[in-house]
Image (cartoon, rainbow, N blue to C red; front, side, top):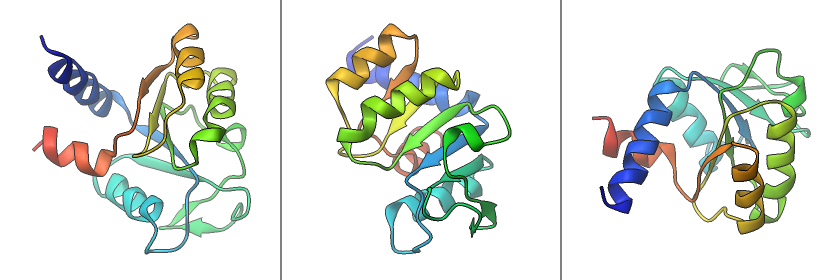
Amino acid sequence: MNNDATEDRKIIDTLNSVKTIALIGASSKPDRDSYKVMAFLLDNNYQVFPINPLLAGTKILGCEVYSSIADVPVPIDMLDVFRQSQYLYDIVLEAKQAAIPIIWTQLGVSDAKAELLASDNEISMIVNRCPAIEIPRLIC
């Protein structure tokens, strides 16, 4: 199997197995990509927990916003990261501590050191992709 087919299979398997998603960097502004992707994920029957310390205690798209991953009251299957690459290493550390098995980073978000840390801790990563693009492309 070529590399693209392997990556596509990993994405499909991930999307089919995940039920709960913590969306880090959630925005309450409808023009922001994190808001649009959150709406898309909700429309596709994922349970989404927005994470944004500045908006904690409010709601985005009817979902309570949490200050951190540790504050989410249920186990999380996947993190969807809308933060700059420089924060990714610390996010992987948080995922490890919370026993979150999958991290998905949005377009333009990558960090080799963070990816190595994830790999060393058996955390699967999908990097530089958007579920709002991948779901229609792969699960039509």
